[in-house]
Length: 468
Ligand code: AMP
Ligand code: ZN
Image (cartoon, helix red, strand yellow):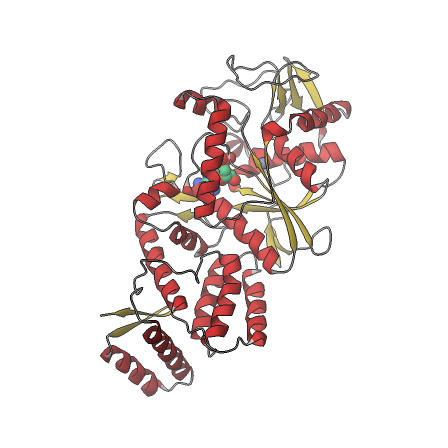
C-alpha cells in the first residue's frame, strides 16, 4: 500500500513497525458544538483509510481522543476556551456540553457509516498521564515554568518545524488580532503544557498538579492518549490539514522530547471541505451539519459518496448542486447493484482477482474515486450476478456505501428485479460489443432497450439508465 506522508512530502510504500499490524491515531473532535460536514470529511477519509488497511490484511488498532478540556479557539494557546464558550452559550456545565456533543458526533458518524475507533478516550480521563509527561519534560530540560504556567521550550529542538518551512504568515493563521502575545514565552513558538494561571477566572475544570491547580494545554492530550494505547511507536497519525501547524508540530516536539526517539512514521492529512464562499465555519453562514442535510431530504450516505468521488489531498468545494448530482449518481448505482441476480455459485477466483485489483488501485494513496470506478467496472464485467454481488460486498467494506442494503426510495426502486437484471445483462452485452467494435450490435441493443422504455446514458462511470 502506498501513502502520501506529510513528513517527507512524498508518496511512500507503507511499512508498519510490526509486520501485519497498524497502530493508528486520529485527532478527535472538540466537543463544544456539532461537527460540520467539513470536519466529517476528515473523519470519513480516515475511516476509509482504516477500512482499506483492514481490507489489505492488516490488523488495525485505532485510537481517538475527545477534546473535552482546554482547546482554545485560537490555535496558539490564546483566544477563548471553546468548551467554556459552548457552556455559556447553552447555559450548561462544561461536562454536560461535552457529553451532549460527543454523543451527537458519534450519531453523525453512524449515519455516515464511519466506524467508531477501537479506543475513544476523553482528555479529562488522562490528567495523570499529562502530568507525568510534563514532569519528564521539565526534568529533561525541554520545559520551563513562567508566570505560573509550564511551557515547552521549542529552542531546545534542532528541528522544530518538521513539516517543512513555516513562514511568518502561516504562523499567524488562527491568531486573532485582539489577543496580545503571551509575554511568559521565551520563544515565539513555545506552547503551554499546563496552565495554573488561567486567564479564565471561571474555568470550570481544574485539577491538582505539582505546579498548582490548573488544566492542560491542548496538544499534550494527543501525545499521552496515543502512547497510553499504542505505545511509544506509532504507524499513522491522522487529522485535517489545519492540524499540521501548530498542533501536530507540537505533538511531535513533546512526544519525541519525552521518548528520545522518533514517534510516528506516517502523517495522513485530509484537505478541507470549503463552501462556495471559502472556509467552512461553525459560526458564519449556514452551519452545515448532517442533520441539516437530512432535513433537506438527503441520505447522509449520498454525502459519503460525494466525498469519495474526489481525492482526500485536494480541497473540495461543497454546493447543493454538487450534492444533488452525487445523490442521483449514488441512487442509480445502488439500484444497479440491487438489481443484480443472486443465483449461481460465486466464482471465488474472480472475487480474489478483483479484490487484488481494488487493493492495488485504491491502495495507491487512498484513491477512492478509482474505487468507485471499479464498482462500475464490476457491473460491466462478464460475470454472473452472484459473483458481482460478492465482489461489490467486498469493495463496500472499504467504501461503506451500503450498496447491497435495500432502501425504500431509490429512483428505479419500483422496478421488477427480473427486468432490472435483464437490463444489466443487456448493458454488459452492449459494452462487450463495443469493445469488439461491433457497433451495429451495440446500437441494436440500445434500440431494443429503448423500445422497452429504457433509455441508456453513457457516462464516465459507465452506462446508467432511466425508465419512461
Ligand atoms: P475540531 O473539532 O475543530 O478539532 O476539528 C475536527 C477535525 O476536523 C480536525 O481533524 C480538523 O483538522 C478537521 N477540519 C476542520 N475543518 C475542516 C474542513 N473545513 N474540512 C475538513 N476537515 C476539517
Ligand atoms: Zn491531536
